[in-house]
Length: 361
Image 1 (cartoon, rainbow, N blue to C red):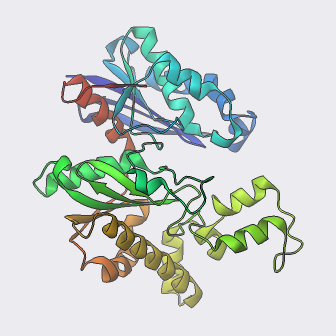
Image 2 (image 1 turned 180 degrees about the vertical axis):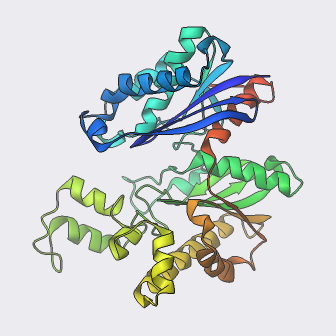
């Protein structure tokens, strides 16, 4: 039996879990107040604070560090890498500690925290399927401008875990199936999986594809340029780079149209007769379905299943609209929510059990 500590830093929380094999001893989310987080200018400055949070939780749960077999952290914004479980090394930690305004994200703390705790007791530290997983075919990288390359940024951890689960439910190895997998959360990733490789994605952070609860998704590029420069019909906006980026990622999608990122609230408004809320929510489903269709063409129509996951996959209203448009392509399998902590633990277990080799960064 292997005992694993799992650490998943979020923007306003630190999730900590301890598993014995796949069974959780505890899974806890420590919420950080805006005052606590606001005391730090940069995410990397939170390192000691987050470390103490993890250590305090372990002490409260009476989990000795010496009892751990390995420590697993959420992977951060590293350079593009293939899918898999990676052993945390000095090079990875140094890269994540290199402050870069363009790549600041709370997940960047996951590997350094895991590395620190693992080193204290002489056990391995791992990350699993970070957001930068890149298994694109070369043809998928090309955009209409040579200066701009299409990038693979996605909810890779949950997408890969759910793809493996769907393949198992289909009674076939993940390496032998073709799937279109959509993660519906604050951002939306729609991906094509061809025989164990995630070969295309809409780039969920600030790329194309459907708008999401908090993301603008694909927009008419000319209008984006005119908005950036305050050209008609967007005179007088005078937005800074940071303000414009927040409109695309954080203040776009449902937030921009309806003032909320909460699908339950949107459905409540629709039930109360809000036709504008219905139109916007239906448009999001329409765009998700359209992107699923696009990914089916990547797989040349040879799709064994369409797989839908993420927090918004709990919405039967949204799923109904999506199914209406895509069920003709392939069976639709739904796995609501996301279990990132278990997915991290399972990635480490595959290595510890000798089912796959840990990759070196």
